[in-house]
Length: 473
Picture 1: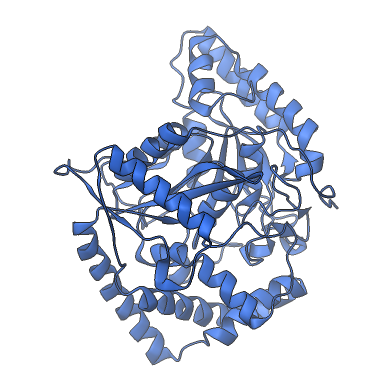
Picture 2: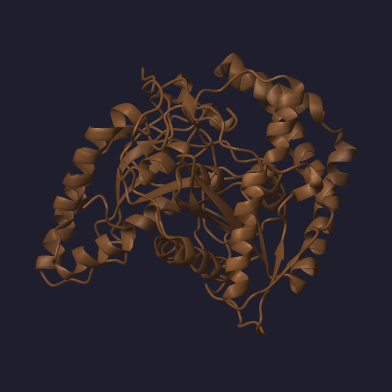
């Protein structure tokens, strides 16, 4: 059963072909089999998951209509509240911070009869860079190659979905943290528009600062684009706990054919690995064959977008740094300190100016996407890195930051993107992202499905190790 997609599992449970309880038991068995090596699932929610599954089975037997994701097992990142479970953020300080209620997106998934089966690993406070290592739970490795990272910061969810431990993962993305794990693990991920999906990003009751309101977006990781679409339908909408979530229709108005696609293989001109450029070109050619009007494009105000992102982050994190720094390891702290060195915090006047500048950048992107409703580009311009975090020097840190700059720029302007795999090269997955105009997730998903139909899906994968097993506490 762990080889089936989320939509396949839900259809089988609704029809009675499969029982929800047997689906959950099969995935718990899969976790027991592969998680000791992958180390993606930090804790199982076995008792609660089986109780929810048995309730679904009782309701189906009684003739009740089940939800769209009936019986689908999902993992939930360690920084998203699941009632009765600690929201640890990966650090000892929050090890016993038991959530009294579900976060809005967890509640919506439960209402669709999806079942949280476990929590998924993440870097300390999401600040560890592109590796997934936490103080509480150790290092998560890539199920394709244990020497490689599963990406960050939702790497636990990416690895769990790719290896069949769950059919869906729930992570978040403020600069690639869903898209990067999707690419590294050979699965699909949706970073929705700002304001599209409800969330609650309070930490220990503290309200989020402006950047933490504008940048992070919670969303699904799955093995197929159809599963992303199903999760998107469930997650979208308003919620009283998120005043920024908007009641926007799931599908936008039809566009005149052919839909124009801008190809950005080397964002910002910072350099791109030849193999990654080739994947972007293959994806672009696939869309061209399908009737899209594909041409190279230059993104508007790209350096300005990166600078504004960096200034917002550094200024706000500097204010809370005295409280955050004692909670981090040297590696995690150094990652952010290098960011401070590269992009020092602003004065109040400059910070206010940056907020205004962001408004103008968003306006220019909206104008750009009137011509190019879709953009195809890399998730990361460099090959997958090592599983364990390293203390980087300033130049290495700069290269790593620029390699994922397309993610940070699109997070700043709040537009949607779908990461979709394109193949497996030298034993590790490759992929691209399809970026859309704001609230045009429908266009992103449709184009990603075209790419998926051409190249196929590659998971779940049973790990075959090239290096040492994951370290666990």
